[in-house]
Image (cartoon, rainbow, N blue to C red; front, side, top):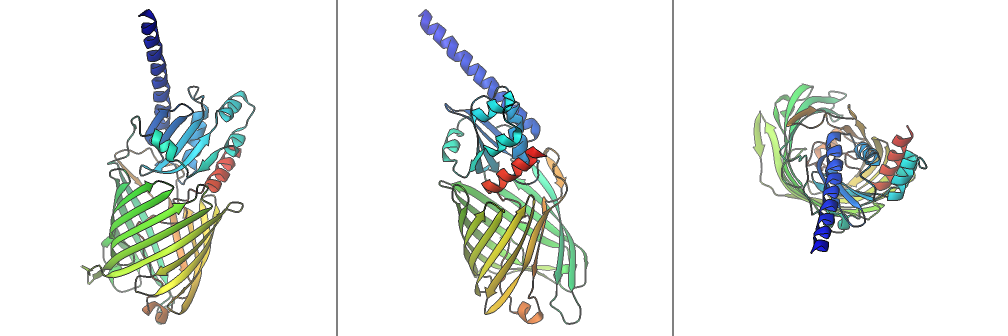
Length: 407
């Protein structure tokens, strides 16, 4: 009986010590501003999930989390880090116990630790373990008021060199349940030399979105609402990543109607137009090049193909594209540049901020005849959609973690 009592006390002590270490790690990450933090002790590793709504981009917050864990004496075993976005897992980062011990003993530099990380999309095992435990510092119900600047130029008229439009488009962005969010945007005109809906205060994107991660690195997104480019309807997007994200394959489909402001009145039509695409992506690791090739049925029924080549320079992305649709060729360039600040305030009930990035696309062919045919038209389902915002490529992230460690 005495042996059973001693064994019970020993198990209780181990459990209390493990719980204290877990609470310490959770609180340290919460103090960084990380949300939806969950820490679970597994036999071979410490499994941690977190969501970063403080640091700009896909790697700055991860760098701060790893740096914090290296300084936590309670963290001794290997660590599986699962990075969340809207409570949906995006990538997994493996930090080995040897690297932790080497850094603390001074045998490894911070940059060497970053070089030894294993980063990828294969996280089914980690997510199974994270079903246990309870998360702290929830993001659900918290609100961001994001003030989007909009600048548009178009050379489609004979009586003016360029048509220009400048707007301010604040959006309320709310996290709902896991993977779900709502975006409500209003567009306020500042200046334009055009005639039409540009003169009126009008609705921007009004979208309810549900994102899920299916097994084997398959991501699905369903969006319903008012999109850009005068469309309203429903859109489904499927994207599969290989474990290393060297290759990715996507399918997209939408059923939409027209959504315009004629004479200051919001006019919508039935959802009758079917559009969609299939795409393949290749990520070249040495120069952080992203190649996209896609075949489309565009909004107004024309079929075409598009090819993009994008280069990621840290948080700046620049690229060129070519497109062929409806018997016409087109092309141009695009970019996404970061806006201040690198680190936002820790999220409270409501936070006012700029978007993380400003993006722009220029098309070489935009004359009156080409524009009137409405060739190659597509839409977006979120106001912050660009090639920098959710670029979780493992090679790209590791390169930037090493650069931050060497600064």
